[in-house]
Length: 146
Image (tube, rainbow, N blue to C red):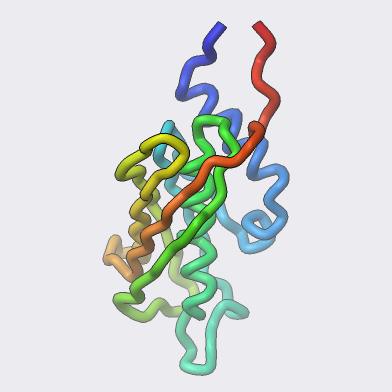
């Protein structure tokens, strides 16, 4: 019996989030997930600021990377990053809320390409991230036995 793709994406995201101590510790919230798509948000806490009093780029990268992970694992096939790049577009101040929206561009065989747009509370793009994925053996949650 095949599980509904949307229900599977949500169950997979829930299981991953419960095991993802880093995303939880940083205060990330899964706003939406569906096959090939994920949207996460994260408040910019004071300890996220660098020496210029703006959000450290590594934390914006981490949010984008987490959204990428939830999107590319949404079909319950273990998937990891094989490469990624980020462009920082504007500074982010403390107290803001960042949202990362990951959208699958292509899934071909074991490999995929995902674009992740990170925006601030005003909806302005602050970073663009592109991730390349590779499926590996196994599943995030055990497949239902038919």
